[in-house]
Length: 131
Image (tube, rainbow, N blue to C red):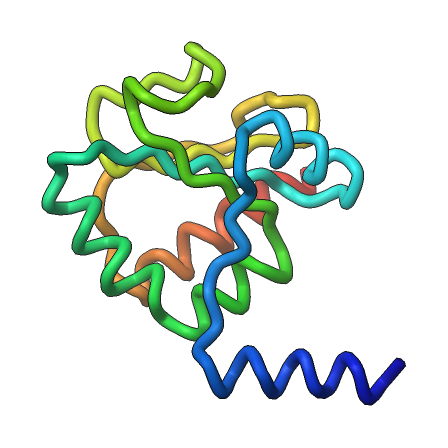
């Protein structure tokens, strides 16, 4: 078993790790509840240049990827196209919502954030989740 885990770890690093996005909000919420982890809902839009910058920079950073994959359950949705709760409005994008397993918003923050600032946001979300 240890060899399989080690091989998976090495393979991920050889080919570049990616965020383990869930396919749907409902799938992600169920997984977050089952695993007792906070749920990150990232809302973007197709025409948003700040969304593309956030995806191409911050969300490509190995430390952010590792942290999101180990401490959070993540789902990426598109405003006006994806199915997600209407209570998660996104007048500005990108929009990050952090929810508990029951769907209660514990933290939200709009905008593009560089890696160091986003790590701080993740710290805040984890702290609020544990309360």
